[in-house]
Length: 548
Image (cartoon, rainbow, N blue to C red; front, side):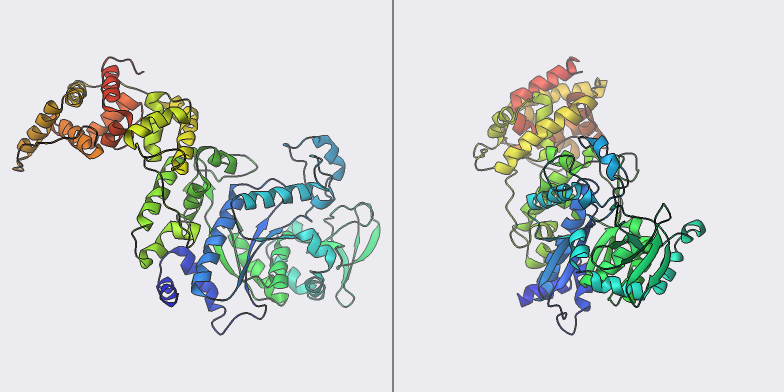
């Protein structure tokens, strides 16, 4: 373990870089509370989304890295801001009109329109817990309502009351002049209507821990700040929560980054030590716009899981978190194949390499073996040319290529075959555009078909390529027309013999004429998977103009 820890101290993997920063907080020993606390936040006004997954997944990666570096225990809490007032009625709930009367009430005081829980907030919290449990995250759930109402936040609320002017000074600097006139860090919960009020304070009594205000009808109230009578505005709530819980780490998106000094300073005013932060870049849709759960652009968690595994999504989340990335459906195949490439590499890597491998940060010390004997990108092309409607149809081809594979021994491959069929029909098929070959391409494709029909013709193609290149190789004696590498040599030789320069133009022609796409798989491997006779028939159909 000590050797692994030494290697982790110099690892350039970003979770280790972040974990080392946290470790510096406790270079003299474990914190007084006995553990390092990681936090993620959740706004339960809507259902969990892909950003929620990303925050918990990435925080878990850093937590896992910290546990390699240190023996100090850790906790991860997911904090739900469910005391927040419902500002508008969501458009995607049943009986939406029944919620109009509950606007501005805390989400945990709004009836559940689904009729399954005590409140709308409780319904969405349950969805969050189910969501996180599905992915196997280790976390503890905390409800804002429970912490405010039970008195667990009373100490920090009394301190906020006592330090009201200092906290307000921090906040007012960040507000427009018209907002400054009515702003207060405290949001009273109306004792009669139960609504969360956005009203200015007439008086804040730091000694007695009370606030005095007029409601919208001009009626004056004085309430204690403790016991769930008030909640804090969201920016002060960030800092107060850090102080109250002694949070050591929290990450959030770039859209929060300008607020970091505000959160930190309020935490310090309220007697806490500001946590370490990690600000990640936001995801973009296919047009380069920020993904928003409100507008529904980009890819949702359910959509990703319709076409690929959760592990491939974790892999995507691992990659360059400080770089803005497009998150559209076309990134899924690449993420799947790269994830499995890393799984295969992990098996033969030394400890240093393993600590830098994304799959360690996804799985920890329990990295599984990949059972994907066929890349996902090739499965997509197989689905395309075979017009497969089910994964069972795909297995007929897969077993030609890998007779030892089966749905039982290769469950990941079995899932991927089903994912590939769905992805092909939803995204690839509608975008397929076949073109006719040029004269040069037509001659080359005809020769490729001839070479695939006759092993002697294939040998002659390779011998001609070797002679033209002047590499002095002896004539080829054996050629296995079921082997992906040998088939790739045939494809390569045909392209060279027909003067494609650079050679990628030959492969582009194959993809555009035969597959209706500008990119494709390693074609020798594809022939081995699809079948030589089937590929010959595909080429002849392309030459006859029957594919478009």
